[in-house]
Image (cartoon, rainbow, N blue to C red; front, top):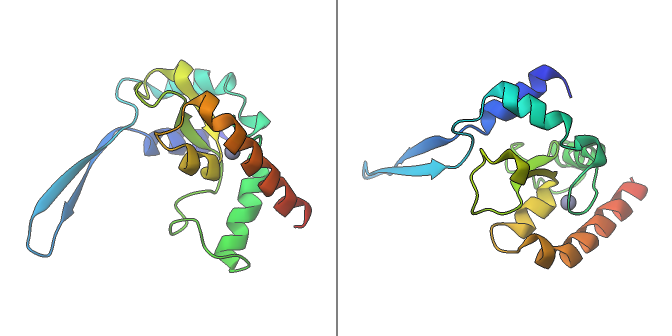
Length: 146
Ligand SMILES: [Zn+2]
């Protein structure tokens, strides 16, 4: 991971308000949670101990594997699951306890797109363990057949 890539991830994860305007001109604002107080330097320090190289915190899928499957989706070898290329290129940031803010860096982990989606804000870390185990197995099988 280059410093440039890390900065990109950090900037994407800053808290923001998304505004959409309906056909009738109604403006809707949605808060997208993210970093409020965390500086890039703090994020960089966290990154060094974040075990990105160990893969998804829940299922163990590596960033290399998710990138391979991302490329399959972009090339058309698989159905495009990437939400327009916006998801799944690499591991994503997940709040283990979603009730905590992104600024609580000790609560952040790297996880794969599939675990991030499945865990959502519903399952606790412990409740999600058996599900993650199966996701990891399924992804591993796909990569072996790759
Ligand atoms: Zn995973």
